[in-house]
Structures are given as C-alpha cells and as structure tokens.
Image 1 (cartoon, one colour):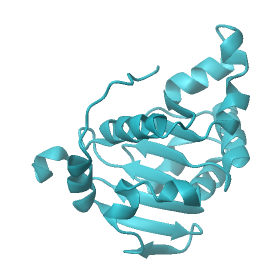
Image 2 (cartoon, rainbow, N blue to C red; image 1 turned 90 degrees about the vertical axis):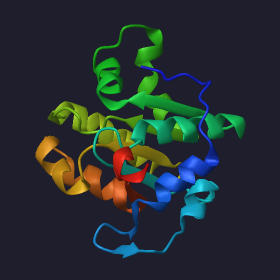
Image 3 (cartoon, rainbow, N blue to C red; image 1 turned 180 degrees about the vertical axis):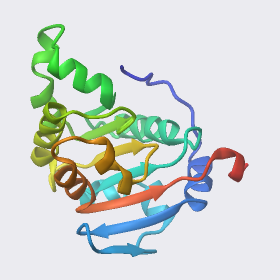
Length: 188
C-alpha cells in the first residue's frame, strides 16, 4: 500500500509532537541514553547523515503515520529514493508476488535511500516473514536509515514476532532514536 505524495504537514506541528514525546537514543540494544538528541536533530533531518534508524511507537492516533508521511515527503523533496509501505502488506507482496515488481521487491528494499515502514507488529509475524524482514534489515544496517512505526512498545515485539524477534529488535535498536509518541488528545 503506497501513501500519497501530496501531504501537507507543517514543520512546527512536527516539532510540537516530538517535543511532547519521550525520545531515547540507543547505542547498542542494552545502552539506552535519554536526552542525547534534541527534537531539532530529528525535525531538521540530521539523523539522515548518520544513517540512524528511527523507531516511532505510540497508541493509535498518536501521529505515527502522519510523521512517516511527513518524513517521506521531505525525503522526496531532498531527491532521495524513499519507499513507504505498511509492513503486513509488504511481507504479503514479498511472500506471494503478484507481478514482476513484487519479485524484485526485497532487493529494492535493501538499497533504497530511506525505508519507511508503518504498522510494524500490528499482526503476528511468522518465522518465514521474520526471516525475510531480518534479511532486509541486515542489508541496510549502518548503511541506510529505516524509519519504523509500531503501536506496540519495543519490549512487546518479542511476543508478536515468531522466530527472529531478538535479532530484529537488536538490529533496529542498534543505533536508533526511539520516539514514544503521546496521543494527539494529550497534546492538542
């Protein structure tokens, strides 16, 4: 499922939402550090140069998809090759290719400049899906940033992912900025 390119979201609103969030930097899975990066580091896209992952977590209606769309549009404006997909649909297209494009999707995901993934851990990920997802993450690790959104905190991912949950979680958090968003009704 692709998301539209013509999305209007002001940088100021993005900053307001992030200012209300809990932001944690992970330098290795067991080394969380609060307060290392400011909201401006994220809002001004400084993390792109560091090739860091961003993990957005929060309840439904907390703005995860809105922020992904904003980041996607800015990446396109910066002439980056960006790809925005819902994880359940993405894995379905990889496992059950519907056309020639679907068959080359895994390789494309490994090399695209910025990968934005929504709805991570919305549904249980079976062992085959977790193997494919891990393969993509390993190819991107430290080379290209991934922005991922999940309504579940990272601590719950192991209950939802069959097979490679620890490896997936560790790779995503290895050098990541984790942003736990508050629901809109608490902000506005």
